[in-house]
Amino acid sequence: MIRPIGHLLAYCAGLLCLWAAAPAVAQITVTELQTPYSFVSSAAGKEYFISSVNGEPEAADNNGFITKLDANGKIVNLKFIQGGRGDVTLHAPKGMALVDQILYVADLDSLRAFDVASGKPLAAIAVPGASAQTRPLLTDVVFDGKSLLYCSDQKANRIYRIELPSHKVTVLTADPSLAGPAGLAVHPKSGRIIAVSWDKGKIFEITPDGAVSELFSNGFFSGRFTNLRGVDFDRWGNMYVSDFTTGKVWRMTWDRRFQVIAEYLPSPGDISIDRTNNLILVPYEFAHAAEMNGLEAPRDGTAKQEKRTLADYGFIPPPPKPATEGASKK
Image 1: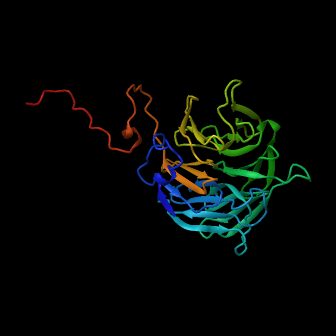
Image 2 (image 1 turned 120 degrees about the vertical axis):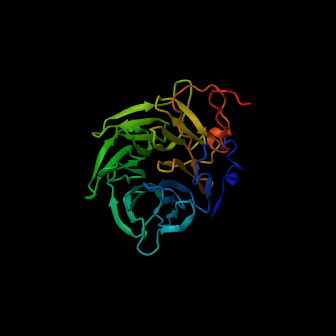
Image 3 (image 1 turned 45 degrees about the vertical axis):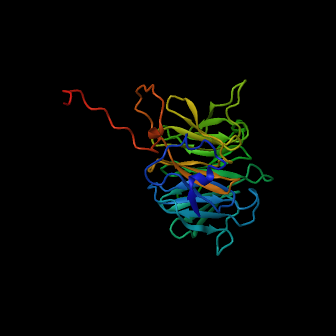
């Protein structure tokens, strides 16, 4: 079911003044989901997938499902991939990553692969635990654009590396300072892994050899972040992070300035950016819904002192440009 953004704004006051409409499929809300966790798009921006935990986030109940949307954000199949149907195993699907025609899904202690056209299961990659007594809790997966997948283990403070197509799993890093790594992204310029912390609201950068460095954290006298869930980048290299507890989405610009672009959101989850269509994709776990909305294009860097209007965000046509200097009309 798809409804205008106004329905969601009943409990997301102030959102429209912060998002920016895009020309195609902006301001679409998808409902009838069940505790949605992650929302991703294909590279071409013509297909979208939403994972629904549909139960307890750590329960092996085999009733999770994945919803498929078309290029206009319309539901093609609410339960395109359904745990317990046929030979599909899917317990509590969380983060997802698309690699060509394969959808990889983080599901408790395994990374599951499905065909994006048919939804048929292709593989189940078991991830070893930190010890014989601890089972991994995978929360996100990201593709480096070449031949590697990375998975975050929130419980064990680990980042795993999976080689494609062999599915060989190794530990990239195991570091308690990661403080519950939830969301992952690949920096579009450096290629390094960016991880956001659920426990302490920190943002980390991880090198290809597993070295962890802290990019941002809360100050001694102020707490900007609480429980960070998702992270991604737009086509210009701006970083976006979602704070599940405070209901905010933050953007960090190229010059490392943070700004809140949306607030009063109901439990924003593992966000992602459709770079082709310049859309932000946000699942709302407690609202059992998800949203597609347009992003504001960056300015050209020149100073602009006047206040922004609705035209800056694409809601109304921009005013006509002044006539060029010349002879006055009679």
